[in-house]
Image 1 (cartoon, rainbow, N blue to C red):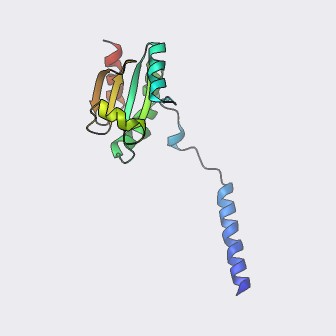
Image 2: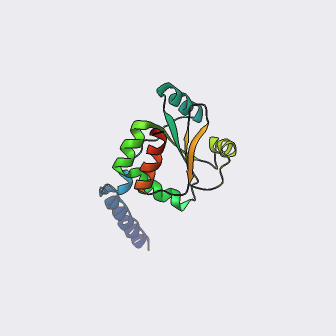
Image 3: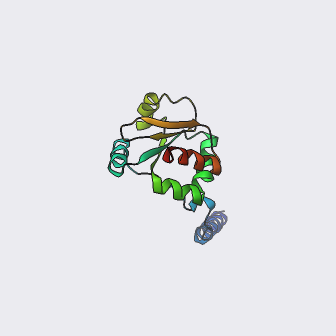
Length: 147
């Protein structure tokens, strides 16, 4: 009986070790996309004022399927990424946690995803509700630059 348990343990160990050694292929999730700001909301506002840029805010919830779809597709598109990375301070925020809760109240958030353009004084310049495809997202971004 001890021998059978020992062999089973050895077999499982070999399988786990061999699966750990296999290098996974790069997934689509790892391809470049919009570079989102890392830091607090206050520091994003300060950066926007310093660079004289608008903040692009992706207001999402972790359970939101359209939000996840945009992260996997629209935000990974090279044209969207290039345009948004050049022209905006990009921020993604879970609006049901941390700083997101306060900001959701201030911005009167009602649905997910909601995409905002906000200036360095925390004023909404433009917003849209719902997931956008690549063309719609680019048009939305260009609409605030070309004013």
